[in-house]
Length: 561
RNA sequence: UGGGGAUUGGUGUAAUGGCAACACGCCUGACUCUGGAUCAGGUAAUCGGGGUUCGACUCCCUGAUCCCCAGCCA
Image (cartoon, rainbow, N blue to C red):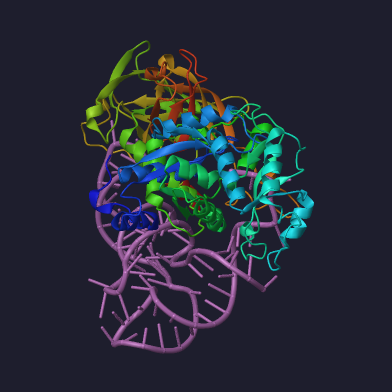
């Protein structure tokens, strides 16, 4: 499972850390953090951030903190914290004792704010939101100083304490850093540090009615925890000067913020807000719907955590905005499953086959290989009888010129069993094929003919009397377009939703070994794809999710006509 | 039009002054008791224009394009 030793990544972040280690900036220590806001579920995009932050720290012998960035009680909920922790653990990472909340630091943050007031670099401002916007200036014009900017330190101290004491209504006052209203970086134009919010906090209870903003809380939390490298996404680049400014003013431990490009993927909705909409509006069944790009959705779908890790590791890290093709993710999933998934036989769309020259009532068993990629996985016995199910797709009455499966008069191999030849096609009054009659060659027992005769096709099958009935859920992309956010003319992103993203097959026929597999168990249905047992399964009647199909060369041939 | 970033095949990354490499995708072919897997081969790139240099993806100048920022969101 280890990466090849000579391919250790040398991306720009690792290069910076190596440099710090050379110069002794952090005395060789590497400590990172993952700071989710508890306002939604983690998705594949977060997985990149998690894998990078945890992965790099580990690689350098350091540790990673999990810190809930819970500075806005209006948007957040404990509901999400457990899900976030579970998903990170599932991905394969552990924060040990280092579980924190930004709200753990509210008292320190408050003290530090007082320090800045005393230093004369923070002030209480009475401007309301609209006024503040006017005073801020624009991208091209400088802002104006707030009329409250020159309050005395004493007055600021008094006002700030009274803000905390709850003397003022929401929005009446803010605490702001005193930096430079004409700074070309708008984040430096006297940014807000505290706002008044009379709202109970999911962690801190009703203790506070003033809450720190992201800019004031984040870097200081990093500092308190002794973080050395604070890795975040590109949009925070503009905030780094402020991150640095606060820590310079405080003269506290000063981590290095490093920004990298977040993960974008074709066909995947990454916006938390829109994912929430999909859940709330019932487009999907929940955050863990297998069509969701959430970690819980992927897990239920059957994607394995090591697959996500190797996917992200192979992508690399850079600062350029980019969008990964979904096929890349699929490749990684298949690559791993191919090596590890046990093979079984299951028929999704059953077509009954009667072997007319096979003795009625007779049953025999064939030895089937569990995983040809890994002979140590051994073999299992699969029952065979006179009546079988094969896949409807494996029969064509009038075959495509390159079709080499079953058609009238053609001989194929039933995997691990016998050669059979189609002799009759039975139809109902509507002309729908209901049954096939075939003959078998007893000499081909086990799947090879002693006369060396070759067949072009090998198909899977399940013995009718031994079949386990199963509900199988097939998934397609929730969005067929490459960029789900790109709304069609006059429409919205919702118009991109694929109405056929879920297909339920109520009566698939599976080989008997599949009757009682536990939820989460995965396998390959030969020739069809990789499947996972869904938690909805009941004893003796499993529900399978198709995680991903096999590569389908035949589909390409058909497409070409 | 202020500031901050970015730009290498269709896609994602490497090469940090010395043969533009790897992976995905796509296309051939071989092999196959999974039209899977595997194997062999092929396709295809340094944003433009100047300059420095024996030599430039890399350094300098200049232009273009894309992304981010005007929440009391994170």
